[in-house]
Amino acid sequence: MSRNLNKMLMLVAIYLYLLVPAASKPMPKRADTSTLPGLPALCMQSYKGISWGWLPDDQRPDATMAKLEADTGKKGCFYGAYSHIRSEDYDPSEIENMTSTADGAILVPSIMPWNVTWSNIDNVLASKIGSLIQSWSDQGFVTYLRFAHEMNCYSDPQCSPGETYAGGKGDPDAFKQAWQLIANACHGIPNCYMFWCPEWTDPQHQDVFNNWWPGEQYVDIVGLDYYPRPEAVNDGFAAAYGPFYQQWVAPYGKPLLLGEVGTSSSDLGVKDAWLKELTMGDFSEFPLYQGAMWFEYDKKGTNFYIALDQSKDQLDTVDLNFV
Ligand SMILES: *[C@@H]1O[C@H](CO)[C@@H](O)[C@H](O)[C@H]1NC(C)=O
Ligand SMILES: *[C@@H]1O[C@H](CO)[C@@H](O)[C@H](O)[C@H]1NC(C)=O
Image (tube, rainbow, N blue to C red; front, top):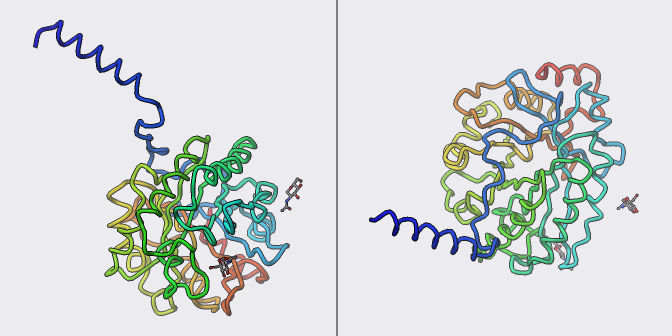
């Protein structure tokens, strides 16, 4: 090709590029990073470098991040709380003031599309959620938006009887579209990251996950919720998370933050064993595993507490895992 033709083609290309409205250009990924973004300085780290956080029992006004810090002597990195979208006119009151109780942690709101279908989630709803997070960003907070967590279970009445996302499991494409709208709102806000967090299912059921993966550029952090039974605690981290890690974490190079951890047992010995495995296990095969959030609830007949209401001995046992 002649030099002039080359030059001309380039000018045409630039001209066309400028003509395309910004919105139709592909959205860049938020985090071109394989590490958890925005970690507060000096928050809880295990001796193996795992960052730690809490989902404090929302039925107890005294179960605060500050109390957990006072009990353990360490500042949690992540603060999880739940909010339900009960209508298209989203009411954020369940989480709107979480900055005042965060004790400096990263905010991890689980915003659950309870009574809206996937296609009810439009730009208006997305911008309502966006303005909430923008106000947190203005106050200097980092947000990991755990939108529609455990979508593969909550969308299925068999998996979650009586408590289901109205969008159901029949239309994963509509879910993806909803997710992308929320992601675009989030990615327009400084320090907002999309946190995709399905629920553990048998590794044989990978198709379930395939249906719910919103697309690489719309996900910044990957998670998984899983509560092993006591027998499975002995099988260790690799048995619990290995297959998921190989399929959904390693190929994308995004950080793994376990969105809810705990065990299905109220037995303190079992809980302590699992805590130790999650913080002090052998993670050499899992370099992208970087954080976890303990489900510090007393709920549905299981007491998950490892810190609330515990003796000094138990708090020391917890602390043994952390720098
Ligand atoms: C959140 O804080 C604002 C300002 O202090 C207050 O007006 C509002 O009622 C609070 N919301 C909830 C749900 O407590
Ligand atoms: C909202 O969703 C919840 C959970 O699935 C359900 O129990 C409740 O009846 C729904 N409320 C309305 C008004 O549809």
